[in-house]
Amino acid sequence: MSTTTGNTIESTVVESLKTFGAKEDKISRDATWDAIDVDSLDLAELAQIVEDEHGVKMEEEAMKEIKTVGDAIDYITEKKGS
Amino acid sequence: MQRRELPDVVVTGIGAVTPLGVGARTLHERWTAGTSAFRDGEAPCADFEPSDHLSMKEARRADRFTQFGVVASDEALRDAGWADELPYDPFRIGCILGTGIGGIGTLEGNHDTLRDDGPHNVSPLAIPLMMSNAGSAALSLRHGLKGPIFSVVSACAAGGHAIGTAMRAIQCGDAQAVVTGGSEAALTPLSRASFASMSALSPTGVSRPFDNRRDGFVMGEGAAVLVLEDGESARARGANILATVSGYGATGDAHHLTAPSAEGEGGARAIMLAMADAGLTAADIDYVNAHGTSTQLNDRSETAALKTSLGEYAHKIPVSSTKSAIGHLLGAAGAVESVATILALRDRIAPPTLGYEEPEDGMDLDYVPNKAKTLKTTSDDRAVALSNSFGFGGHNVTLCLETA
Image (cartoon, rainbow over all chains, first blue to last red; front, side, top):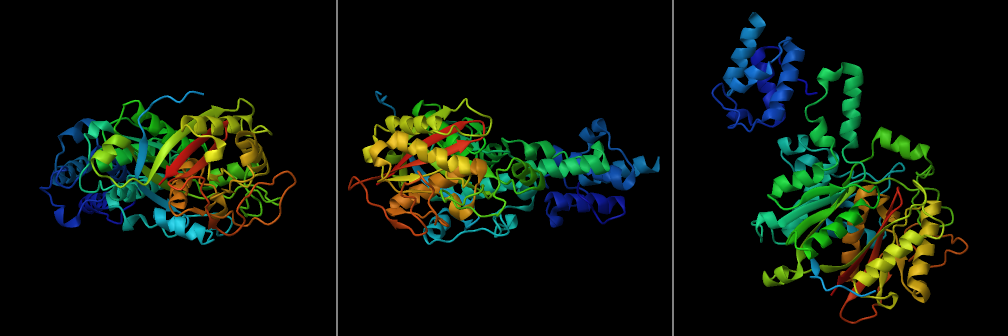
């Protein structure tokens, strides 16, 4: 499994996306998965990393609604806080 | 046997990644110069760096065996003049690749994760990377090939089966062209231990096919890809034709799970079928690229098969083994050796069996010991070779290859 060095939710997400091959200069809160060439296999890996580093389980149903980097960070942040 | 009238199938592009380096011509030039690629009892593709050829995403979405295949395919498609545009309807272009054990490195790594970190940590990429058809799937995606896409798995005969099946797909009209070949990356702890425990690997780490002192094969890794086209279509588009795949013979031993029969009946029959398919006889054959694994059983049985199938010509035809230079590439072997054979025919060279010094009683063919020699052809306008691939499970394949 991929490992990251970040410890905030944002850094976990961004570092993971970079590991998957997304270009750093294209990663922003508004970037859609399509725009940074992130697909369902990448999101499955992201879910593993997030659960490992932050103890947050990204639910499959919720994942379908997450379309951008910012959506993902907000979802994880909200779930971790609750 | 009556030869059926079928379309001719030509090779218009070749590519390879082998322990001798990246590139089909590199393999040919280094082998014919007598260079071998062994280090510490294996033949790794030590110079292969995925990031030289693939984006980060492409590299992490592919097991090493697929990476080899993709890089070999890029070379082959460039060679065929396909780099900018496919010459046919994509639905008429297939991809058939051979492998012995597919993504075994991915399997082993994820099994470690399963054992050490639990099932939740097994990678979502584990299956798509380890599946044996990952190679043909990756080539289809990379090049936009939409015809028949699949992989064939028949141990060390897989590369030969893939090319033969590709040839038939074109002859039967299922495709106008097929990107074919084989790839393997099995220099892994489990694979190594498994081959060693069945005493297939050379304990001394020396590959010396047909030599009396041979004691097993030495594992290599790599891939080769060939672009096969319907001959008429290739000529119509003005393609540079490298070779013709003129014959394919495939048989099974029904003898033993791993051992060939002593007299090589299955191998002999595959050779005879390939010659008949090409409309040729033993008198027409100029060179044999042997399976020649450097195991006691294979090399003796293959010699017997050649004597049975080639009769009085067996002693006149040079026979050599690519595995003396790069080891045994398992499911990639048949493809890599076909590429090496095509370039040898083109240059009228019989490449050498390296390390051959000590004959064994009864094994008395011309194994082209240690030094390449000029290939004398029976015809002025063509050179003809047979390439053998035999696999555990009793799978035998012979291809007949011809060049101008």
